Image 1 (cartoon, rainbow, N blue to C red):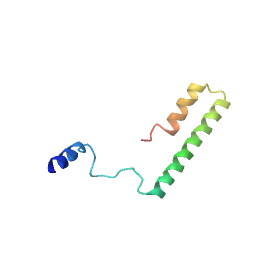
Image 2 (tube, helix red, strand yellow):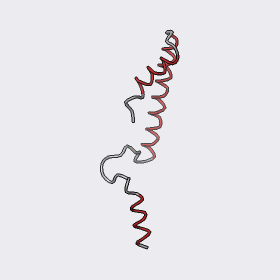
Image 3 (spheres, rainbow, N blue to C red):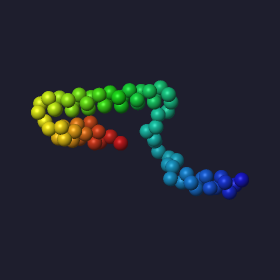
Image 4 (tube, one colour):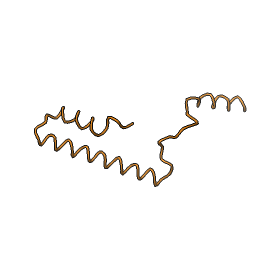
Length: 74
């Protein structure tokens, strides 16, 4: 039995045991994160549409929106 436990432990060596993770801690937090992400996407879509309405070519508008809304998020 210890061989199986050792194998499982060695397979999970890449998992960080310390430090803070950005995973939701519960259902309420997961729902909150979902709606925050949805709001961020809607804001980015509106920004894209505004840029296109101002005459910015679509490929440039996408690059601007990505830089302004998503580039620094991981």
